[in-house]
Image (cartoon, rainbow, N blue to C red; front, side):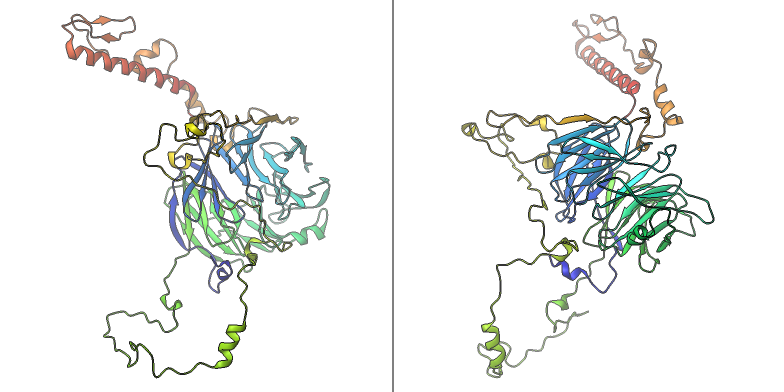
Length: 556
């Protein structure tokens, strides 16, 4: 894999669909690790599916939450993964073992969370209708970031590229730049739509390379700024955006925006349909529109950190967009010719001779120079694409890939534990959930040699003045018509039993009739027919009972 060859002279953005990733469950959010080797996908059943992106196979499944996963973020070294679910819980996961290290319970739903780009001990959390919170994982403490207006708490936040500053934006278009360590205000400005009208900030995204960042606002315009200019303007500055990107024809609102791996392109997903718009940052021109299936709504977009590949989520499926790979056989040999039709081959005179008599003698100077030159085959040069501008070496402790247990055709009685003769020895248990389709750890029987897993520490985050009855946007708006329909359901109590399963078979001679109406074939007159009827009625009563519980409880 020669990453240096990726800097081609052609376009460096995807052009067509390149398959899908089916996570079995409905996918809601996705994110690449720092090298693009692993893709974490959060699902609506609370599971986190980690894909090996090179082989396009599932490497691990973590049964993370009970409720849907709404946000994910990798740590810098790839060993940790932080997730948030719609039940207001933030969890820290060890990717290799699949264990939960810590949990934080918030009073309101989590809209977004982000790991510190350099410090593995800090996580930025954006609760709904609350000021952003900076978590410290080592001591489970939190700091509430200052906001511009206490009455406007619809705030989004993001770390800059190296985590030195935190950028926050509110519903009135005010951007604050805070120092990460001291939370002091460094710079601020207001995003305006013209004269004095302001627009709400929907999201702030930073490029992986360079100092640029984009702001997605409610006026359907994506503004690109230079971070260095923002810092020089200071407080209440008036910086001008480098680019203003929008769909002038359809006036499309944007669901999700992000930069390409090299920071030269910007992709934005439409909030109306499964469509991806790609702009070139330097010029600001629209270079490509990728259309998915009609009628689907886009949920999330992620650009590969190194390659021109985009992952998008709609209708619970992860779609992959990439470049069209054209085979160029002449690259293997300069004299290689591609033929449109068969041509009779003409043999050269000395082509199949054992010794070529007409061969010219090679020049001694070039041959001697090649023999004397020593080739270094031991030292490994760092890959430039994996290093930051202030780094010279790669992170050798980084987790790029996950081990996968081989599939066993004829498993033994205890396939997940050690053999009986090696009960005293502790052997690491590989995660086989990728092949069984379930990441439930309860299926792994605990043996004597394996120590029990420690329970994750749960910390409750207390936030003053934050409403605790808010509903996450993924689950619907509080008080809307859909939620009212769900809670209404069928009539409760004994009157609804007959409506659930109206079928009542007639009792045959010798059958026993129970008070609830169930029939059991007991006598000789009932025979086979009576037993079949009784079985059907028993099954029917079970179905009605479970259906009624499901209907009263409502859908998750």
